[in-house]
Length: 132
Image 1 (cartoon, one colour):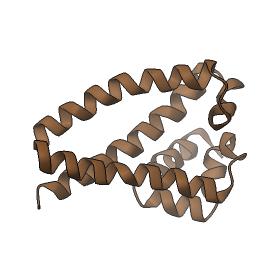
Image 2: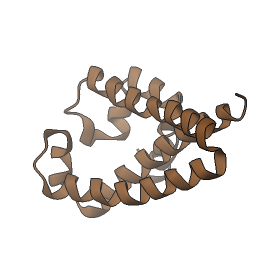
Image 3: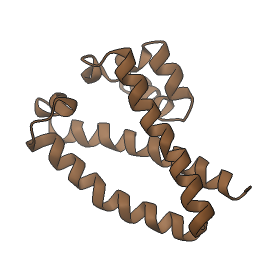
Image 4: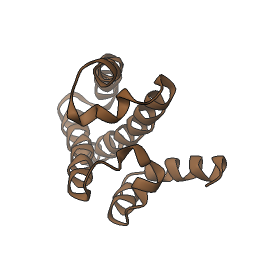
């Protein structure tokens, strides 16, 4: 797979709902071979976790309004992202075993694409909260 094609595949796999298609067709493991240790069931559980960001975005948007919800998300993400990177590199957890053998650049890339995915799910929830 060429570099440009792989980048397009990573972008597509970050789009909500399309990511589920990637998981169900096992294409996700071709785009992210470092996840090959995960079963399809575990990938679907991870997808459900990402789907929860839609619910969280909706609830925070309804209760606090969209502007404050965006601020809450940015602050939470800014705190959580570096902590998750640190944990993935230096704390022994089975969930992030793959990160121990990868360069920091590869780990950052994976977490960035995942961050894009959960941000889009959160944005869907926020958009839905404006309809409530």
